[in-house]
Image (cartoon, helix red, strand yellow):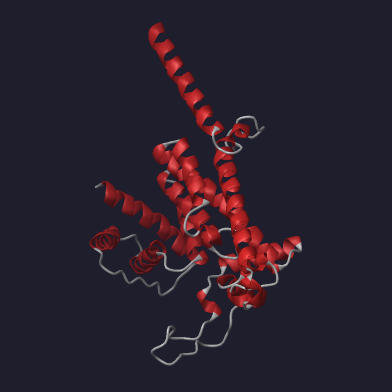
Length: 303
C-alpha cells in the first residue's frame, strides 16, 4: 500500500514540475505562480498574460505599419483614415457602432438601390446589433470617456474575457497547457485586428466561449442566458434561431416538443436549410428554449 502511495506522490510531483516548467517558458508565465490571486482565478493568470503580451506586440506592429505607410492621413475617417493611427480602430464598422451608440437607430425605412450593384439596399445602422453599442453608451456615461474611448475599453476588456473563456473550454478538452496555447492563438488569429478595435467580435467571442463552457458543464440556465446575449451581439446565429422556433411551438402546444427538436438536429446534420421564426419573441421564452434546445442537441448526439 505504501508503495502505491509513494508512486502516486511521485507522479503528482512530476506533473506539478512539468506545469511550472511550461508556464515559465511563456512571457510573464513565471509570475502567475507567485501572484496573490484567489485559487479560482490563479489558473487564468498565465493564459491572460500570454494573450496580453501577444496583443501588445501585434498592436505595436500594426501601428508601425500604419505609420510607415502614412496614407491613413489622406483617407476618409469613415473608411480607414484619421488624424492619428489609432483613429483607424474606429473606422468602417466601428463608425456605424459609434453612430448607433450616439444617435440610436435610423428610423427611416430601408432604401432600395438599383439592381446589379454590390448592395441591394442603402447601408443602414439596422445591420449592427444593439448589445455592443449599448455597452459603449453605458460605459461612456459611467466613466466620462468619449464614445470612441468607451468602445475601445469595452473591446479590450471583452477580449480578455474571451481569452479566459477559450482557455476554460480548451483546458476541459485537452488540459491547461493546450488551453493556454489556445488563448495565445486567439491573439494572433486572422481576425485579431478587430479584437482591440471598435468592433463587436471580442464581445461576441467572449459570450460564445463561456456559453460553450456552460454547455460542457451542463449549466443550462447560464448557457441559455449567454446564447440569448449572443443573439444581441451579432447576427446569424442558428442556435438562437432554432431556440426561437422551439419557443413558438411550445407556446402553441404548451410543452416542449422533443420530436421537433430532433427534426431540427437531423436537418442540421443533413445540411438542410432551417427556417425559424417566432411570432411572439420574448426574453423569457428565448432563454428557456435556449436551455431546452441545447440539452436536446446533446441528448441526440449522445444517442
